[in-house]
Amino acid sequence: MANGGSGEFFKGFLFGGLIGAILAILYAPQSGKETRNEIGKKADELAGKAREEYEATLDKSKKSYASAIERLKELELLAKKKVDDVEEQVQELTEKGKETVEESRTRLKRAINAGVDAYKEEKEEKTTKKKKA
Image 1 (tube, rainbow, N blue to C red):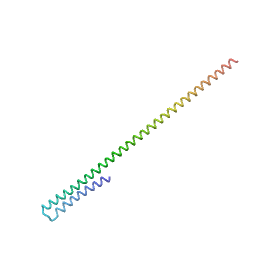
Image 2 (cartoon, rainbow, N blue to C red):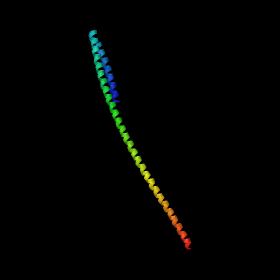
Image 3 (spheres, rainbow, N blue to C red):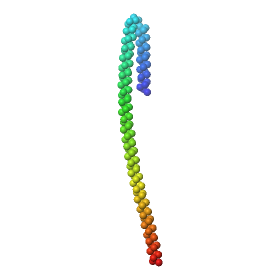
Image 4 (tube, rainbow, N blue to C red):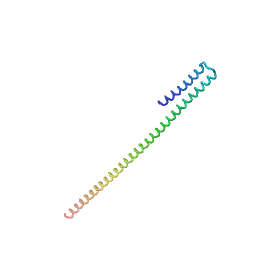
């Protein structure tokens, strides 16, 4: 916003300077040839200043563009790093989830086997008691 304001100020300054120079030359007590020479000099002078300002603004724009591109590259690298970190965390959570599921499966199998063994033992005890009786 500040760059746009200074550009507008400069345009107004040049335009005002040009009008002021023309009016000063036109109302100066000189001959027509001298006035035309003076107008030409002032026009060349203002054109030179405008060219200098244009080049300075162009240089500043190039620097701003390069800075913006550099910042975008930094942000891209940062985003890639964040994505890699998140992928790593997801992988870790997936592995932990697999381990937890496997542990739960193993415990369930042991519990079922213990229940089946207990059932078989009880059945054998009943069968043994019936044979003794």
